[in-house]
Amino acid sequence: MSADSSTATPVKTGAPRPLQTSGSTDHLLATPAAAAGSGGGSSSAMHSPAYQAMLQSPLASTHSKFPLPGDPGYVKPYVFLGGSCDPTTWRADIAVPQLMKAGIPFFNPHISDWHPNLIALEAKAKEVCEVLLFVIDAKTRAIASMLEATEYIMAARRVVIVILDIPENTRIDGELIGGRQLKDLNRARAFLCDIAARHQKYCDVFDSVENAVHHIIVTHPNHHTQR
Image 1 (spheres, rainbow, N blue to C red):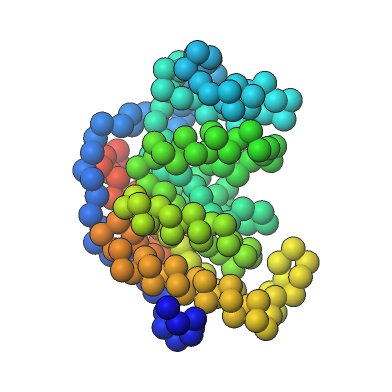
Image 2 (cartoon, helix red, strand yellow):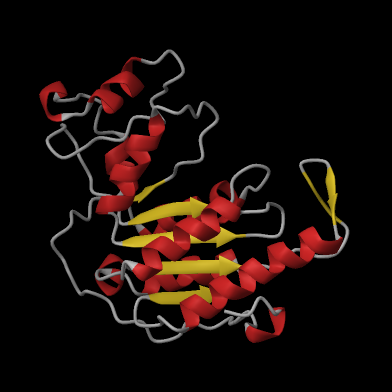
């Protein structure tokens, strides 16, 4: 494949495109509020060593503990909030409030006390979620997130992506992004957009977090009954 950036142009859309969904209603649709008040008990025999290590870590908080099937009060998350983390605040500012208001359970991996033991927990959450939201924003390089999004698109998972180019003279981790690095980071975004455009049966691309979250809410199987 040619590395010429002209071969792929980011698809920027503010309106949701038609998206084929599984129509499955086998997941639990308890509200996030109910999940928050359900308690944190666990059936240790069902969980992996990584999960047990996470629970026992002094860094773990109640916000880190994601119940698994078999735990009291388990609520299956519908959407995984993946993509860019620090210094972004799109989860707390937009996604979490809107999903809470809509009564849609989610898994938020962006926590202040994150540690490596949570990797297995996040993998389990991505496995059970119906929708994987990835935000590739302009404040981070997001290289790992782009690779991860590509993996799930090619695995025919239902993926919703926000892709934003990095402007000239942006600072990331204190480094001024320009020249070849800027070109490569935006070229990677263009390639991801091209992959998504060729797999629209499973994937939608948006130009803002607001539009992406709105799309997830209005395409939720119980959207009309929750209003």
